[in-house]
Image (cartoon, rainbow, N blue to C red; front, side, top):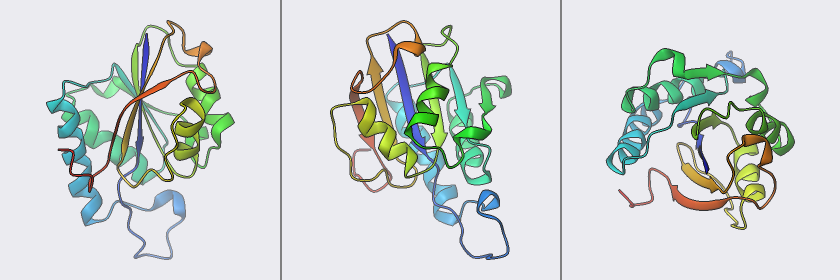
Length: 165
C-alpha cells in the first residue's frame, strides 16, 4: 500500500512586490503554522519515508519545517521544479515516477494544483486546500505508477484553523 501526504505551502508574504512569485517567503503566520501542522502529524505517528517539494521558497521552507518535525535527514528531501505551478497531469506524472522503495511520501506544493489533485485522486470533493493544509491519501498499490484518478482514499484532511488538533 502507498500513502501520499499532500501539503500546501504555509502562508506566504506578499509585502515585497519586487519579488518574483517563486521567491516569496513565508509570513509570520506561515512560520507559526508549518511547525504546528508538522507536530499534529507527529502526534498521530504519521511520518513519511521521503519528501518531494516544489523548489519555490515558500514551499521548500514549509517542507523543511515538516522535515525537522519528522526528524528526516537532508537527503530525504528532494525538489522537483515541475511541481511549481503544476496542474493535475504534471503532479500525477511526478507521483507516478516516485521510487517504489518508499511507501509514504509527502508532496509539498501549491494551489490550485494540489486541490485539483486531491479531488482527482479520491472520490471526495474539497473546495480548497487552505495554506498549510494536509491531506493524506491511501492507495491499494505497491507501485506509484499505478496511481490514477479515483484510486485513493482520503484518510485525513487537516488545516491550521480546523480545530482537529
